[in-house]
Image (tube, rainbow, N blue to C red; front, side, top):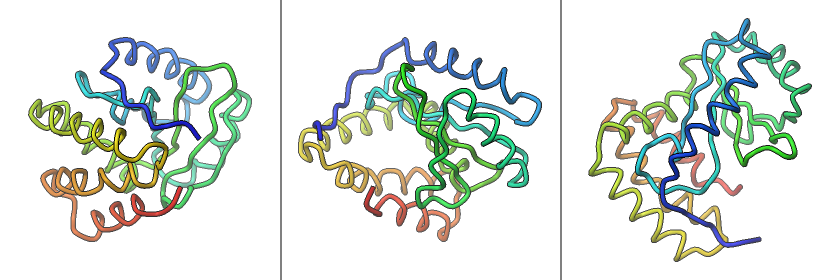
Length: 182
């Protein structure tokens, strides 16, 4: 397994997201509320692993099965929740830019986590600098150990979620999921 690679912010990331978003939107727009660019590549100036994270948002869990089926012809293989309740993960189609796709009901913990962290970082340049330094240090220290990398970011993320008003139980659930082996 290769070492974890954290790179400087790339202004092409929003354009890559836009291309992927349009492709998905065309297929499932009639059933979804949004396709959100989340994760570190969605925050201008933030260093990141060069992988676009995307959340497809549905009104509620009753739409999950239908949207999962409609994403399959685009080449997205459903992987289940991967231990994160309320968030369905997919393997990306071959030949496309590196990205993670998640399907989340509106208001789900996985979606609230992603949006809270993204929105806080977009509004707080000093946090972007601190998070960049943390991610770069962790990538250098842990080599290819993705579990150690994610766990090393957990306290930083938990502090953001506290600031954004998530309750203690939700923050503990997110923190616990970040400690679970991948």
